[in-house]
Length: 436
Ligand code: XUL
Ligand code: CO
Image: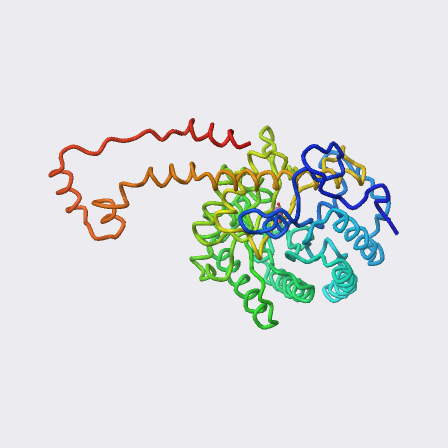
């Protein structure tokens, strides 16, 4: 059964093509810095926006046409969606997908029924993975939609709800493991608070850490060797999210002994909501050895919420790829499109246009970043800018062999400081544009 009968397998046709259902830049077998684009970019389709999104918003109901979906919460409907999803991902040529437990299978009346539902759908997911070769980039648990999680999941004030969340993650981990998932994601969801009048901040943070340690322990006990990823996001849904940005997440992980067990999944629109650029969040994670994977999307400069749009800006993707190439890729992580079509883009074919655009934008970013790196002008400038620390007093400062008193003596003896040099920001911005 073809759910997208008008769409062929998406092929690479090159930059001159005007076919909107073809790649102009993503050429899976093309080699960039020793890796094929397919292996470097590791594209993933997200199940939640792409197969569960309806186009509803706070002001209106569903708009998206999804003719295969009967709108019910039945297991049969969920299994049919799997067929649709794999036809879509296969035609698109993305090697990976990812999901929350409740995206793929309906929540039951109780935990036992929810687990049975998940098992039933996971069986179908596995069959389709085997048939198509599409792999699971990561699994996760939805610990934020059900009303039981109103106060949070790992940071709830209700111990029974904490226990339920733990049981849910236990199951999600087992299913992720069974499906060969290579990562497991924690996104805070409702882990945060609105008002300290009713919140024990210390206890909530301790509980979140306990929860993550238990997840890591369980993974070990079942032989899951995938990478754990913590996904920062400020605001939405709570005012003070505990996983605000990369720095907050890393501080949390270090405080609670999780730093060697968990890396980060950095999302573009979350970075900008935190008042950072995506490049900053990626680079901060990278230099801390914590850049695990990315959720690729983009926000809207004029809107202050998580619009989750598909990335099309090649300036942005070039910046992302400069950092990703600096650590030779993301594996076992990848580039997951945590992005949704606009509610006005209601036809199924719009899902293809959206993903093709995102993949092409990253392919262009990869090529451009590789050209910039090959030329070395940017890295050469940065290296030269800090050269005063390569020898002499600078090298001693870095080596930790001089004190404040030594530096005072050094300055008094020298008298005249070495002059400052221009930072050349504008020249370097022009240089990046030369490659675009
Ligand atoms: C929410 C978000 C999540 C996580 C997975 O903004 O990004 O979908 O990626 O829970
Ligand atoms: Co995300």
